[in-house]
Image (cartoon, rainbow, N blue to C red):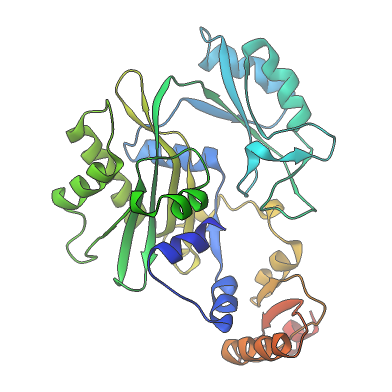
Length: 335
């Protein structure tokens, strides 16, 4: 959903076939706590936090990391947006809560092992295997920041907005002039001037301008060094102590770079993916499940997209995208 908006903001349009083409591309997606840890390693300011997988870990985590804090943030970890407004199938409302420290164990217990349904998961929802306990920051301003790969400028594109913490789709529709786009020359890399344009578009209220410029440059360098296809922070926030902090972390990575990003790709959480797609990937098949009723198995991505276009043209809906490829074996096809 967000990625589709980012493409529109970047000035790109897609045909019906193009939409299928974008869906078939595989992108490693990691959890928020993993993204925050990665950002921290690259010198980017992030909140203190820890991911826990059982209720028994909550008390020790709070004692070790937040001994003097009265409140902490408990965030369910699923690979989907809209967690805060989501609903668990056990009836518990909301996948993100600010709670008293002594209530964290109870809230975490209502999340762990449960299915969270958000606007991006579909009605089947996703299981919460971990929750992320974070320090509660005193925020004075919330902004939006992202980097994507842009076909029009043939390189990374930074998209920023001086308002954040809410749906960027709604902001772009209501206040398009607030959205700024700064293309980066992939050969030169990010310059001080580029970073300054981004910071001026974010219009921080209390954070030091030079420090903010350095944070933007570090985010860009992380994007390139880790072969990201998307880096999104919503909100990128200013705290009362005048620090710019990435209070959220959404990162996708190019699967073509798996051979040189082995540590990153070891973070893949297949429990959050469609099991059909996981099985297909193990068989080296290019498969994406869709919400239709007509199955498609085609030799060649272009022919597969054309087939789905024809199905749509005649009133049907594809149940999947499956390109078996020109070198598929009998075993792959039988699978």
